[in-house]
Image (cartoon, rainbow, N blue to C red; front, side):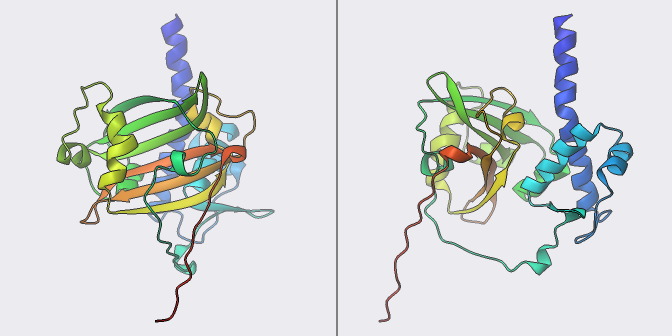
Length: 250
């Protein structure tokens, strides 16, 4: 009986992810073109055959991934990136949990699974990979979890660097240390989100719902994606210091 309850609970937790994947595909396939407005929440919930609460979770994830934006009083719109000028900022490649969190962790709880990729996952790793390694990491200080990272690695990354997934701790070391030493380039973006606690799922990271989301893509020398990650840090624990040197004329 307990197993049945757990199965039902897990299915409910995953429902918003399925809605996310469906909406993601519709946006990428042009059913909702760039700049267009999504149907109202009541209409979209009926269309997706889900509750409005489930739909709102999916919409929150679409917003934090930069696919849609909410304009107060009007609704949700697909972001048109052709209207946004690109920005570039050179940075030292560092683990965001070490570089941007004021709380120091003393333990990382790590789990992973292997799945066939959804369209969303293929888009994040920028390749048509056969399978994806999905890693969950919870950062702890003592018994308390305060940060969470969700990472997607194409199986090619695992094969190329001969990561033994059967060896305890091997993937965690690769994620936490090795990747940051072998990556040639990284791309990071910082945004506000309220999805940290329900995305973390296993632990409540903060008694508040305010988080900084750091999306991070690590690349090798050939420009191939090694890993795409989403790092969640409670707003009150986020700390970012930028050092800049003035360029002097020769």
